[in-house]
Image (tube, rainbow over all chains, first blue to last red; front, side, top):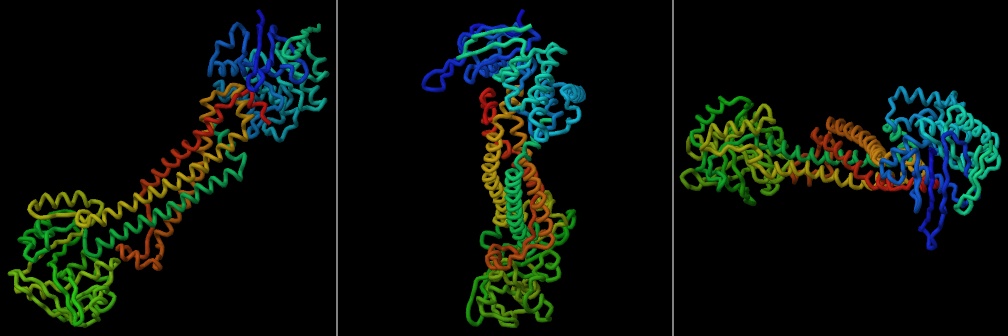
Length: 228
Length: 404
């Protein structure tokens, strides 16, 4: 059974005078352990698509089933709880808590999950060591480079032990060296822990590294290619 | 960790937070000092009234106050005094003969309250002897010596050793006139009191009345003023046929003004806090607006709305409590210092004295007011946070994350 099943997903925004169809009847499935890039030009619906499967936005039509659970059935705090325990998020602008250290940033999500202090501190330390920031535990985001901040964000995404990680243009703000390092890290985690990564990008170098590439254009899937 | 986050969030924008903290602190400081002064004024009026004339408890003929008739004296005073000796907690007692009359000088006349006292006994209950500005407190051997207030001296154009004639109705309804010599001129905090009260030795008064001693007023001073209600009740039970009153009952206007001062202080502080409320709300709103993307991220990764709401509330609370604590500490210290040294408001002497208050005030506040203040700070902090917190939880995570 697919980890994520997207069926006939349509999203129409009515915020402007003319309704905008951001996603148009998208159907796609993702298996456990995939390393998939959602690609397409700006405005193609990549972010909307990730928001939908991340439970951050509601579809106008169609449905998303994650590990047998229909996201539409989860309301209010249940949906928040679901995101907390099942999905890891990595954002384009890192979005770390600036007043917290790297360790505290990773720890915080486990606090929300109710993980005991000792355990969450140990896990946060291990994760930061795994992303190569063992010597930067007590540095605040402002004291870290963009690449390092995004590594903290990846560690945070993994800290909640999610079923999959959604990354919205994770390398967009990074230089090529940092982008490569981050991709190495994500690939490594994917292979080592069979962690599912779904990330949006329009960076050709990133696309090359993905094992599956789903291409969106004008809100519709125009290509879905898996490499060996 | 949420507490640590809230605390750290406050200090993201140090200038903004410091401004609010200082606004709360100085608002509170000003409020405490003004309140302390108002309460001090109330206390001064109460203490002045007690020390000047009232004592803590007074006993009268039940109908004495109808017209202060000379014939409405306390019956069988020796027995009353004997019974009072059985009451614990009484420091001293003075007996007074007191009725209305007319004081006349060579130039003018004025209605006065004539009080015959035993000077040494009176000294133990009231502090009139400390208020002598000219002359002495019955030190001369002159039997017809009289003490008058400074205001009356001005009104009747009297000086030390001037002659003053008192006219009053005798016990049999006859008109009596006695000539006295001004032995001393006193000045209390109340110019109104000074204008209408004259004191002379009780023996001289009784001789003029050609009667046995008659006492219209028994004034009692307690060892511990805080026991006033229970002591008054005890004495009331002892003399059911006499009018026994605490100073609060005897002079309700003084008690009312003292209570009013505390009430004013509460109102004053509430108004200050009301102004501060908008300051905190503004700061918290700006703080939320500055963190839209971060709040969106927190809600996206799984922070529940009630926790976000609580975090904003906690930030407001920490901000307000910090300001409140600083305000209470500097306000409390200022009160402690000024309570020791006093604040000299002699430039307002005339108006303060017309209220019966001393012009040197010793600011103080009741302890329960500090507890009330803490409660007010918590309340204001929560009220101030409601709107920003609602704004925060209404953010849509997907949109908020992409806010620049």
